[in-house]
Image: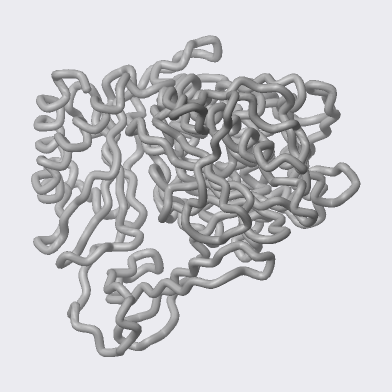
Length: 527
């Protein structure tokens, strides 16, 4: 963190107090509209955070937390409300984005998260809120009974905040994926308010290999182990068909791992370990982020989960990725884009924390597809070249077709090409199609083209022609929107606003990039 941040934050608190007078509680403020345009050829002015180490990032969070009480008061929050700092991002131009969770009378406020945006001058540029409602409930004493394991919360995602219980039910989904269902019930009436599945999956498949790859391993005793000392100590474990714990750390005698087939148990571990490394490197190189949470600490991977389990998933409670072996127990679901997808669920949880249901759930899934695809292009692997197909190597359909298509999502038979009022009622893997299609249009444009040997033909809802700005710029815009402007309740309309703000920050208010963002959203009927 740069040494002048504390001075700026103190000035920002005064600016916040002034802003409250003119109605900050009525909604999220926009970024400073006076930002001069950079033009379409300009380089991103805030493409990566200014924190160059995990320790600087940690220091910034701790510093912001010491001033959270003052920030809450200046924002006009109630006496029983407190702010908890989750993240701080400082742009290269000195703009500071501080992400907060909120509590009320000591209870977590679900849907109470907010982000403040402060210019280098100390001027508050805006506040992005998950809810604009005043957080207040008549009583924090429930009138209904529930399981002893339930936690008491304030539910603010449904409009008027209410006292509620959050219960977590564990089990197994139909396809064998572990289930951790969060159920929110009104603590006064007992009415069910919301539910979502916390285990976030990518898809199903049979086989995946990335050819001969370099692995970062660690010498141990007379042999080696799959511990990546270059990337936060990421470890890869073999569950040996178990469904809990970590299993055994994968080891080897001569540091040559696997044989490229599912008959060798190390092969799945190689793909998972390699995928985690490429995702870490992509975050570092493209996003300036040191690991999933930005703190330099690694997640871990588990392979050989369950018996004939045809899926992979991210679990935030263990901060880990888990991969099944496919229907024949020899075709591990460890594709490069699958690994990037799963780790990116962790990135979303560490930033916007998009609720895994409704339109925000579709955006959550799409974020993982977007970054999983980006990891594949970044890796530049000759065996698995970059493309806009999701899970194309795992052969889920048995005929070589991919799990999802970004250029025209409906080609999978279920995903949405365009937004409509019912899209949030679809499964999140299908409602994600709207954002996946937006990203493809933003990066590559509409119409027919061939990229890395793959033919695409992307339509638009209104028949318009969209000109792409390139994948690198599209990634920067999506990441900045996710990390600084989206919140847990962001829907498609709010995602358009978030990406517009991100494009303005990065390229200017008169830029071709901002115009392309608008054109791409219109192309998927988000207006």
